[in-house]
Length: 504
Image (cartoon, rainbow, N blue to C red; front, side):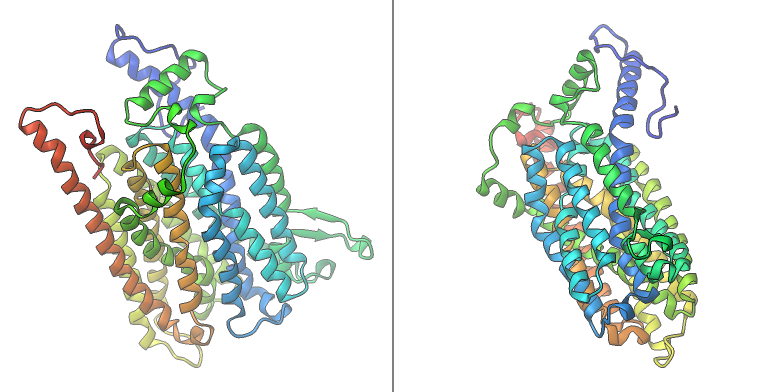
């Protein structure tokens, strides 16, 4: 089996020796990485795809009859987005901290099972109130998945090994988004089967046998897959490195030693409890606040694309089904650039130029969408179709380059396991404030005129994102002057935090 990230066919790893040649040690480490990749990435990747499908489906089914069936009017759809985002934001940190107390497989399996059941409920419901309750529960359960997966993966890789793997993991959102559009296109063709509208087949993921209409037999599609994946996660998701079971004793020694050499704290550091004051100190540190502002700006593009892209495409003149299909190329282009620049960032060992490039592309996308507003016929919603479709591409491409590199960049400049678990949760959870903003600025009554308020807000926060990442880079560069000055003066690093260079 060829590994996606490392090139080796070595099947056994022995302990690194000081007498081994550099080439031999390198080969042993590549073999170890192959084994780690194989045990960690596939299952977490499937989990991310699943959560994104469940998250994205509401945007797809909006244009397939959900609003009519549930008698939704005005900003009811926006409220459904908000009730998902609020618990997602508030529970991100508490949910992530639970990973330190419980075995990762147990905890991730629990939250996956919960949101699978809640998603099924969203389709079964016959009322708008029921939809809100189910969306709220989905937000509660999904809150911990991405930061928990990010933290768990981070604990196994060195600084310049992690980015390409996280970018690969991040493409689960692109696969999930593209598959959600295709699945909606396919399932709406099942309209009225078993007495259910086509959109319900997508959200609730149920098939009702017509032969048993009076006593429905339920066969779960997406929901069943989520629940089955949760069961697999209970047994297959790996523990933290110090408790690893899939490595031999000598491989485990190599792993812990190479991580220790990359300035990751020892496992003993995790034995002391995290205090509230420590968590607040990390959450308010400039190394978290500045990238958080950039993540927030970036996530507005992501949430707007997920929730409103099908609506925008339909207003470009596409039929509902055609709009679903036209979301797929957008997600696939984002996937390509996400992988390309994730690999480039690791190989060049720099982050800022790629993050700045992504934020600039996103800003151009927002600007293009805003410029198109004055060319739109408000009676039909049509106008500038090619330019507006290109703007959607730019939004997702810029977001796909920027966000995964930004999260890894910020996390790599935090010291210790406690700072990282709080930092990742704050960045990923806080960025979801973008969901609240997009849900309130993409106003239903502006649907036919190109969502002018939403696009203008996007331009503003896009400028904020460019500024935030630039100030963040400047702060890291200034802090690095300490170790560089000591070296130029012929002094040795003291080994404390001040001697550790930030990743730029």
